[in-house]
Structures are given as C-alpha cells and as structure tokens.
Image 1 (tube, rainbow, N blue to C red):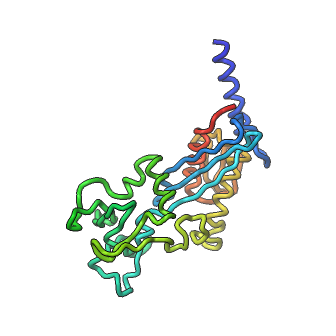
Image 2 (image 1 turned 180 degrees about the vertical axis):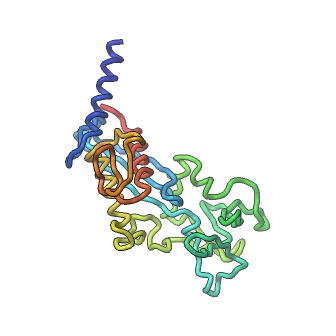
Length: 258
C-alpha cells in the first residue's frame, strides 16, 4: 500500500508542475529521448497529427500538422476541357466545389456519391458503379493506424484521380493551397485573420511546452484573449484550439515515465 501511495503522490506532483505557468519548458517526469505521435480528425475536415518528443532532460518539444483529406485533394477545375458534369461530383461548402468522380487511394478505386449536400467516395464495382462498404474518408478516419497511414502516404503519391473509370491515374502532389499538408505554408496565411495557421499552431505548441499538458476540459476556455488554459493566456486565436491541444495530450499520454 505504501508503494502505491508513493507512486500516486509522484504522479500528482508531475501534473502540478505541468499545470503551472512560465516561459521555460516545465519539468515533466517523462523519460528522456523518446518520441510519440497521435492522430485525430480536426477542424472539420483534416487528419491532424501531434508529434511530441523529450530531450535528454525529459523536457517536451511539440509539432502539430494537418493533412488534407480527399474532398480537398480531389478538387478539379470544371472550366477545363477534361472535367465535365459527367466525371465530377459537387458539394456546397463556401460555394460550389467540383471534385473528381473517380479517385484511387492505395491502389483501390472509389466512385463518388452525393449524400445530402455532401460527397462521399465508396469502393467501385468492376463496372465503376458504387459498391458496398463505408466511405473512403470514414475508412481513413477509422483509427490511429488508418489515419497514420493516410498522413504518411498521401505525400508519397498514394492518392490519385481519374477522368474516367479505368483511365490513366493522375497522382495528386499538391492541394489547392499548395502542399499536401498545412505546414507547407499555403493554408490560412497571415492577413486572413489576426494570426495565421502556423502562428496559431506555434502558440498551442508553446502552451503545451511551457505550461504543461495536465489540464482538463474544464480548464480550457476561449474568450476575448483567445485560447486559455486555467488562468493562463496561450496567445492562440484558433477556435478549434481545444481540439489541437487535446491531440497533443493524446500524444503525451503515450510517453513513458522515468
């Protein structure tokens, strides 16, 4: 019993340290020289990734990023000669969006279906008609392993579009924003809002490093000063900051203790 009580006290002290403010990385109690990661569906349409590492003293470093999903990567120019109403599908989100009807992910061909105002891609039958099974994005978001696979492979040619079923695949190497990941720089630049995507991610990363990660949902808020943790202001203005911070917490939860 004495050993159990000692361990519980040690854990409580770690979280107490991790919840206090400061402008330097806080003591964590984590084992040194390790790296973990976590994935989640974030910001209403992306695979988010948090990578956390500890240095030789066990202090944290944090990196956030997001990979675009098919509904962004399959976007096409309906005004061009190769795309028509017959080989595209449309959905409404900040205007009318045209996407390729047929896409390939990791060697499997999918065909678009319109469900309500949304587009989903399901596995195609041998004749190109919609088959059974879940939609492509649902398959991608199924669990940590499937999200990791998408995040890692989408930048290496795993996603392609077709102008016709059985046609020549066109490998997608960039999104409408430039790269395949938000960290590539074209998404949400400075000027659209008071802070760019990159500035928001840096503020959230620094909050985890300098304030710690031992906060509950009740500790997290959003007000005139942006995203707050208990009584500390993080500087982040992204409305989905809680999602990103939770993602960091999930990755931190995979670290080993000293």
